[in-house]
Amino acid sequence: MIINFIQTDSQNFFNCLEGINKTDVTDISNSQSICLLIGSDLVLTDSMLQLDQQCGGIISKFLQQNTKNKQIFSGKFGEIKFLTIANGEEIKNIILLGIGQSNQLKEFQIQELGGIIQKSIAANAIMDVIILVDYDISNYNRFKIASLIASGAELASYKFKKYFTKKNVNNNDNKLQETSEMHLFISLKDANDIEQAKAYFNNILQPINEGVVLARNLISEPPNKLYPATYAQKIEEEFKILKNEFGAKVNVKILGAQEMRDLNMEALLGVGQGSQKESKLVSISYLGAVDKDQAPLALVGKGVTFDTGGISLKPSAGMEDMKYDMAGSAAVVGAIKALARRKAKVNVVGVVALVENMPGSNAQRPSDVVTTMSGQTVEVLNTDAEGRLILADALWYVQEVFKPESIIDLATLTGAITIALGYSYAGCFSNNNELAQKLIISGEKVNENLWRMPLHKDYDDMLKSNIADIANIGNVRGAAGSCTAASFLQKFIQFKQNHDSSKTPIPWAHLDIASVAWNKKGGNICPAGAVGFGVRLINKFVEDNYECIK
Image (tube, rainbow, N blue to C red; front, top):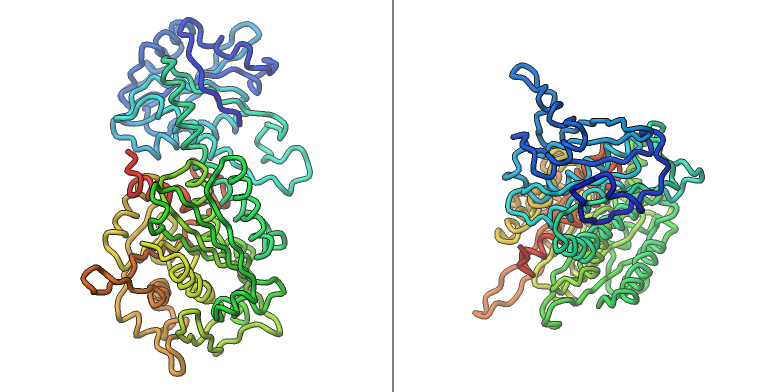
């Protein structure tokens, strides 16, 4: 998709595309189209009225067909209607896009408007569309509205096409060819708005989108292509480009098995020992704060590139989805790319633990005992509860090496979180009320929603082992699976010394994203498959709490 911001010629809207649209206008698949944002009050702006007049009153006549008993268009959020105008040999479309109550829309909903129109024009094989932004939405500047719409359209257009060999890689009901470029023109009246829209989109929103796309690409890769070594290499290459092309202050360090062995990371290494693929631990540090010595925000991600369950083997049905078990690590990598790419004013470090959990002659056995980097011992009662094992060492490592001021880990940790919350929320566990609330608020702003889940000493009791410091699963089958997993992780959060010599735990939040990391149906700004959940949430959290961006 190619996105441009243009200034509207109110005398003839269709001529806005002259010199830009190179398609042969012969049928609907090559038509010129204009999209209008219509609120639930169905009021037309001055520009819309001018367009209506140019088109013989087609819009007003259509809306006049509404009656008390039958509404053909209500203007509710996401509602779409196509009006086709035959004019000589040309066919031109006016697309009415409902935005609901304009004074109540949130940022993410404006973004979703772009996704809705993108999906609609793609389904109808329309190559060029102008979106007229002359509607006041909530308290947002029009340049921001235009940029958000563009951003949502770009995210919605995502396709993972890397392994297709044929030119037409779209669904059978989509006439667009891979070689075709869809053009989206965001139209504003004011030249200053256009310049601000370009700047906001190019410098802020597009870098965030790039982070989301990176996460989606990583999650979508097949496990024979993306395994710990190749994953680590991709991270290194990605941030090398970012450093060279954009001057990003990033540094990547990769630890192999021997280096982790020297650090006594038996928990992490134990998970990967059944695989022929060497486990890796990758750290990415970005220094963007004014004070480069300021303690960083730490992001930690679970990166199981494929999870068979190990000796505690998973059922075969649905196992193909276990390539997604590294979505937490992808969110960390994507978030840091977004922050570094837009030069966020924050110091942040990401640590991702990369393993492949396979059965084999050397695989970890149920009842094995491993010693973590922290020195605590763990009895492994189930090798399919592996995410918490690799996170235990990754969490301890990030605290020992980088001394963070707070920690957020993201992991597709438990199926139990889906049973508890369904597919609309990720679980948020935290030892710090303020951190949890800030994350929840930031998540609401980008529609990556979190639900606070409990941490309680009773869950600690469920993790008692007869022969080690802790067991890796609870002792009551099927009970509080996500809560006991979070309680396990909490045991690897260190205490910090306060000015009054007291000690308090480092603020930490665990986001169990197993229910939201991928989906079967897709959404307004995401196709079916990898979501990239967490990238926009973390970015918004940084904006709100480190940069104070409104």
